[in-house]
Length: 472
Image 1: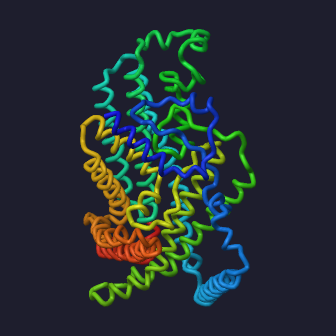
Image 2: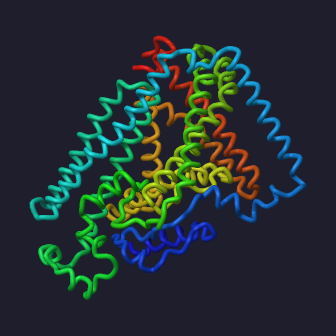
Image 3: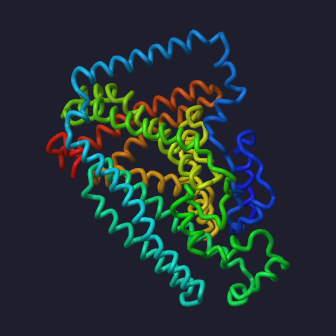
């Protein structure tokens, strides 16, 4: 079993790009306690995209040889922006014409903020349940039973409430819910393993004198060593501040907060949100809401019409959330482990693309599904990998199904259509360009297909007029 864990550790070390990561000081690592089952070390990373662009590998872009091509691209992009700005000024901007929709969006934003805060407070029940276990009032089986029962009740009540929301805000709130569920599950599972690793009686550990703790075998900051890490400040920092989905007794912290960086990322995030709303209202909703999609020809036309705006929204969602929002939140909370994504845009296969796209979810799946299946159930690596893939598909299907009130697995169907392209991209690994082109073709086709399928089902079930997409 330990050989398997070592293989996992070695594979992760090989994939780690050392040029982007700063080495941590020795005392920063020692103060972090984790079960030996989870061997990965904390990572410290600044702004990934800024580091990537500043690399010498991209110096050729700044060379005079490509100056004309870059200027052509900027001019073409500016002409497109001017064209659609003129259309908005002449025909009217959709969100500005309908005043009611603006109020619905504003109320929706306030709702998401309140939902995020309230959902985080509800997770405190898990914290107090674990406190009872730590004091000896609950046994391990009772703790797990109460934990999973609360996960079930919390999920059912939240999803029942979100079913009545409009698509955009329902998807966002479901994403928030799933992140909190993953966090509290990681909190309980990690601390239970730490509990099992402690050899001494817990009564002796809790009563241990501070002076003895500094002199004896426990090294590092005692506040972050089990069971002293089970305190309200530590828990609330993990729930509200740390963007990570996996629990650590202590996260690497930065020494200062950069005000200029906060202003830059805040403005960029607001710009991304405004652009997403603009593309959605001006280019996607008119096509999807007014299209019957009865013929195969019309579906093909809609796919080609929506492929560019859908992909742009998808990229903006990635950049706005994974880069701007998470880095902004990390900067305010002085959170140092900012490894949220890799260069997925350079992926030479679809499987590589999905591994680099969302490192937060991937890390949680590796720790609490992949490794746990091997450790607790003695499954093979292939079986654990399949289970991880199924869980990620179910999560993505859940977001869209709750948002658009759909019971058919459309997302799964679209993902299955990517299997031939994934096979081709894997076979094209000798040609990075061919594999990367196949990956982008998959993205360009899958995004509009998902939009068409879910919008058609939502229109046939609940659609009344244009405002119903934004207003409950």
